Image (spheres, rainbow, N blue to C red):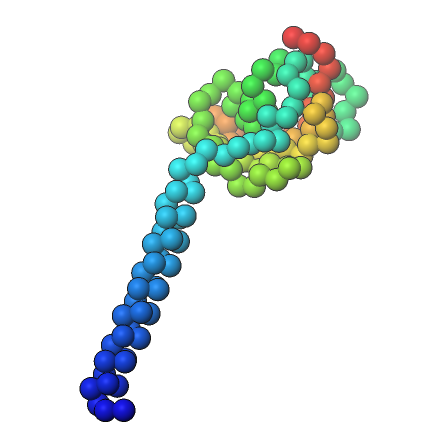
Length: 146
């Protein structure tokens, strides 16, 4: 093999390698750019039955708080129910969801919802509301119609 053939072979291998790297990078970049733009499904919440739900602190024998559940996403930000907040889905599996949210200023929270059935979920939430920290665990159960 002559010196020219060796240079040409190395050049061709380099070009092929560059093409492979470029096409792989383009595919990975497409996934990286398109993934955040997709809206999260939140299928766990969509499967919950609408109606009146009672939220009771775990282990409590009290009445609990009544919530008319039209949009189940209100369960993600119970302490910030009336506020418009941006959300980031940390984890979304068939059995549980974990979401971080921010409501302007310093108000924010992280909520985990574990589904037991379409009428029963366990909710754990913590964050800041009005410069004060909060943390709670409740059982949310569908108790009737609104």
